[in-house]
Image (tube, rainbow over all chains, first blue to last red; front, side, top):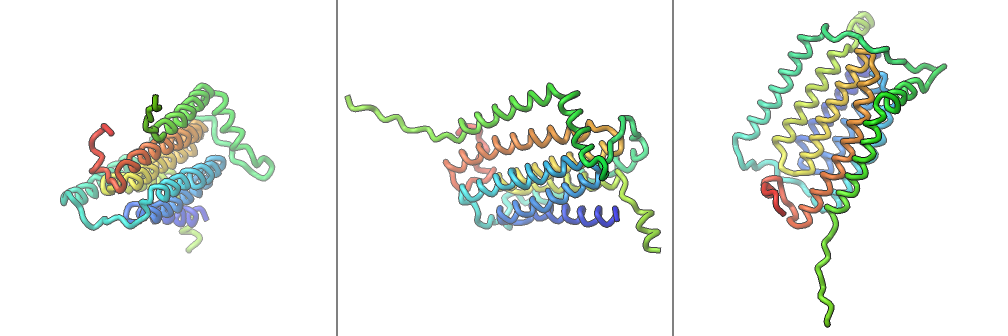
Length: 180
Length: 109
């Protein structure tokens, strides 16, 4: 069963990721991104991160991708991009080589060190029927306990981001001289 | 036979980490290959998701909730980053419609 979930979710993730890269239409790329994000949410559930799976669906699929689609429609760039022509002939093969190199190196490192990482924390609490919200409670103890300063700094970051974006996208009105 | 095979091949942390590496590699190729700034941004999201996946896998393996806390903060920062990045892209595209990243190589507006 676990294997089945892993295979299906991995297929979703990889199909969506390849779709983002190869689809020439930006809207199709955004929809492929949703497929990947849902696959990652399934993986989160399989790894006992239930709260993060919910946040993944709500924040990523619900807010970030909608923001992407909104900007695509607002700018009117929802037409097929010509991805056949390539100004630098050597770039695509080089990019594929770099990507395969990254995958190969990280995979080799992970496989070589698969027995090094051992359990050192106090353990994750697995939610069950008797205690369904134990993952949320454990996570909130960590966020509002050990990492509460980082949490507060995050709120400052969000305010700065919102104010900065409003400033960036503001239309500067042309100064009209009042007739004297 | 089939059920024995299924129980023998239970996904371990290594599987999740390898999947995360593959997802990160696809995102890298996307950033390097695509010209549309919006699609490049989506590929950066792919890479962030790959990192989140490996953090969650390590949290399970090491029995430490800190990995999931990190993913929480990464998501918040990713949301802020998307807001600022899309704001920059909107203000560039307003001046030059249909610009690709090759056209906006200069930092001045």
